[in-house]
Image (cartoon, rainbow, N blue to C red):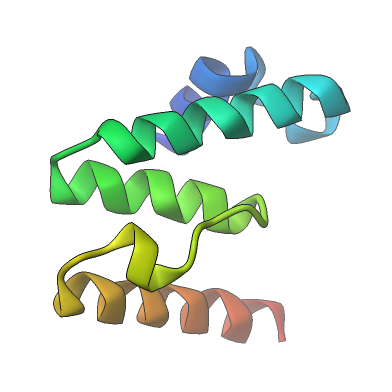
Length: 85
């Protein structure tokens, strides 16, 4: 899953600064629905990561049944935090 492709798919634009607040809210809701329906672990993780970046990710215990996936998500959050710090 390419980040820019996902932005175009869910928000109709790959420029985050050009996405209207209403379009952002609608896109986030579509991602959350897709996350709930997705069965592929890698795709679920990518959708969850996009939601995390947007500040709308569900809790890890809700998003991931497998402990390894939750640990991978924690590592992802730590990497993002380290990059921003």
